[in-house]
Length: 108
Length: 317
Image: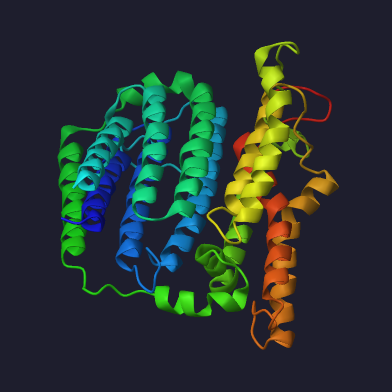
């Protein structure tokens, strides 16, 4: 089992863990954390692929690695927007619930 | 052999922290786990030979995201128990578990049957890197070969900031983001907020400049600068600017605008959008990076600070 396969499998597990939390956790802030875990799993998979692309004297393919840097920054921006939306939701409704009266339906 | 054991240990710890961040009951503990997870993940990047990615992950994935989550959880404290009471039913848990296992298993299978040899662009990058004048292949990709991605990313950041700001209640539009922090002017926080920023700025400039030939660059540098700014704000030594401040708005858009201008210039001087004329690649890259630095620093800091919460007259939300 070489290192990129190992981290690739770990990435698959992380996506699963994050997806489970995203569906099951009721609090939106916890959903954001779970979504970030899922996202980092995707990044890690991408990183493992970059490592597999090592060639021409480079230890890894720099193209996916550069895109990863972009991805991490964009993920931060998306999380910031999501958190601002939650805080606003709580200010407006005094509740962090995403459920409307028919249960488990997203609120707009 | 030792390397494999270290990798395996990191993976087990990483999965345990991910489970902790998702499953633990208390939101604050979950965030603490998530920050540790982000830092551990940057170790994984080192093992995957992605030093630039590791720096970004430690600074933004663990650091800034963690700080932002902690800020959010302190404001959302009261809503936690109410959300807990509406826990979803056992049926949903089972379906979610099956779905997640299915997705994870499918991905794992894909990892195991990846083609060998792996497709790669590394040879093209190392062949053409000399033309760009930079020695760090990641910087070459970010600012020359895939400059379009970096340009669009900078624009995404501007749009995200506009999105966050537009969540401000009408009466605070044009006001200052975040709370006004106050601390003991002779306290340890204020002391560090005076001591660290000069060092942080030197370090950030070094990381920025070294990024041309070594791991580092504008993202990592901007995060350090944003962190120094946050420290000064938290110690109450300075206040966030009004979001209508002209200089601030100029700083936010200068990077993308200059990037676009240089990109369009490429249409005439080098025959393609975002292309650099021969022998001018390095200076142009430096100009774009220098212009992006204030943009990234301001946006990262202001995303952390959140929407405006105080009007000009100093009333508080």
